[in-house]
Image (cartoon, rainbow, N blue to C red; front, side, top):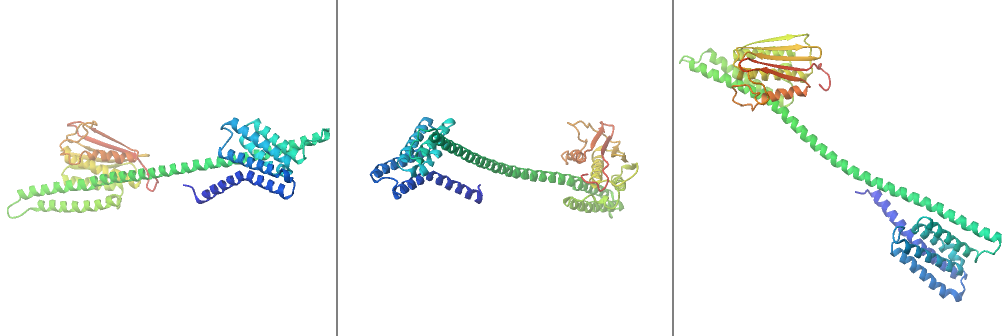
Length: 428
C-alpha cells in the first residue's frame, strides 16, 4: 500500500505531465496574442494566420489523442512531426513571435516522438525554421550570414540535445527508483508473510516441545509414582489378607504409609513439572547423593537388593544434565521393578573428564532390544512404550548416547553417556 508522501508525489508528477503537455498549446496562444497586440501581423493576413493557428492546434490535439510514442507507428509519428515543423515554419514566416515562442514545441515533439538520428533531424529542422523566423527570412548569400546562421542552428541543436538528454536521464532514474521502491514494497510484503509463517511455526514448535516436555515429566513422575502406589496398596491388601482376624499387622501399616508418602511426593513432582522446575532430590544434594538415595529407596520398596557406586571426582553439573540422568535412573529402575523379575540391581555413576556415564544393570529376565521388539517383557503396555522413548529423547537433547544391552534370560544393562557440562555453563 502506498504511503501518503508517495501518493502526493504521484499526484504532483501527474500534474507536471499534464502541465508539460499543455505548454505547446499555451505557447501557440501566447504567440498569437503577441503577434496581434504588437501589430507584427498585418491585418490582411490575420484571418489566414488564425486559420493556420487553429489547424496547428488541431494537429497537436490529434497527436496527443493518438498517444504516440517512439515505438508505435513510427511512419505516422514522423509524418505528424514533419507536418508540425512545416506549420512552425509557415507561422514563423508570418510573425517572429511564433518563431520565438511556439517554435519551442518543435524541439519537444521531435525529441520525444522520433528515434535515433531522426530526432536530431527533427531538432535540426526545427532550429533551422526558428532561426529563419528570427532573422526575418533565409540568410543572405554571404559567407558571414551563412556562417552565423549555421552557428545559431548548431548551438540550438546542441543545447536542446544536452538538456533533453539530461531530462531523459533524470526521468529514467526516477522510474528506476520507482521500480526499486515497488520491488522493496513487494519484498517487505513477502518478508511480512514469511515472518508470520515463522512465528506460527515457532509457536507450533514451542507448543510441541512443551507437550513433549510435559509428557516426559508426567511419565517420569506421576506414572511411576502411581505404579508404586498401586504396588504398595496391592502388597498391603495381601498383608491384610494374611493378617490375624483381630486386626492388620505392622507390615500392613508400613505399606499404607509408604503409599501415602509416594502419593504426596509425586503430587509435589507433578507441580514442579508444570512449573519446569528441576527434580526435588537435586535441590538439597548433589547428583551422586540423589542417585544413592533413589537406589536405596527403590530397594526398600521393592525388596530387591540394589547397590550404588560413584567413580571419579564428584563435581556439580549443569542442572539439565543432572535432571536427565536422575530421570533416566528412575525410569530404568522402574522397568526393572515392573518387568525384570530381578534379584539384584546396580547403579553406577562415573565422572570422567569430558563425559558423565550412568549404568543401570540387573540380573533379571532380559529382553530383545532390537528396534522392532525393544520392549521389556511382562508389561501390560500401560506406558505405551513411552519409557525407552522418553529416555532416548532426554539423552538426545544433551547430545549424548543411550545403549541397551540385553538378551532373554541374561539380564539388562542400560548405559547413558552425556557431555559433562559444568554447573552454570550456558546452552547446556
